[in-house]
Length: 438
Image: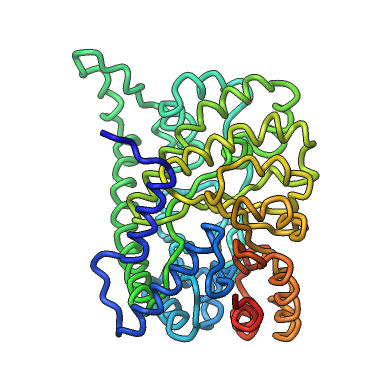
């Protein structure tokens, strides 16, 4: 059997994206608009000039606040989640759909006793407008060997019991590799009441997730029927961030860069194929086109250029190439500035990724990356929240002139926002229509 090249695989995915199966558009115009929008995105990813610069609203929870609701209500009331997203879909023209999958099901979080997030009524006030991440040292420096030796076993019996209170009993389980022939001894821990309770919580989580997924699916289907494509797909992170965000914590991983550099690198190399495999599997399952990779700890000022090239980029590059090899497009959200990284990150195949920049100098980004990959960003979130439509359009006009020449630019914010002025989001789209036509 002949193995397709990454480019051929990507082209096959593009064709499926253009002609989604089992889709009933509300009318012929919606179907035409859908194909036009998808073609615009394919062109910009492929570094061709589209009909105009495409726009992505930089939002997550915005539909809830636009409709007069809040995070707590939409996390726990799925009818409310349904209402606010249907209102958003009906009242906004969009090039790209942003769905409610960003709203986590609150009761599932409750039942699992999730430790990595704080949400309204759980670590933060009931009127809090966004989640908060609860960073901690969830694995210890002397546990790298166990992680490297058997990541799946480490996740199940060490890591999960620390980040989910409901799974503390999993630390009592035997490794799956304990089953040699006679399984009696292996299953002994499953006679424990705390283990059995934990397994019941897993089933309850599945029940809750089923209800949530139904609403998310209905919203997604409505947007698609109206001709609005999605950039949905999978999600993963740089191996450095996987360890530094949710396992060792920022302080821990910085210390490891100096005290345990070889162990840290070995652990990242072990995690790399898992990050690729899981992201690709989730993208294939969703029928999506892209994998989002938020880059948390690689920005200018967090580490030196030498440290970036030693600890951050090598495994991140492997993750990117592993995804690209499957014909999927990574969206690399470079939070902060990447001004000192631009030459390094240019080492990627042509037309294979989208670099989404926050505070990076976009003129330099266009100069260094523009002939190789699509770039996106960096309209300030502060401008969208507090500026006027005129201010927004003026900024967009300038950045389109800088980055839009020759194609390969997607207009969006530099950061995710939740409570922008609706007229400013509309101004973002209007600017592309006025100044971004080729």
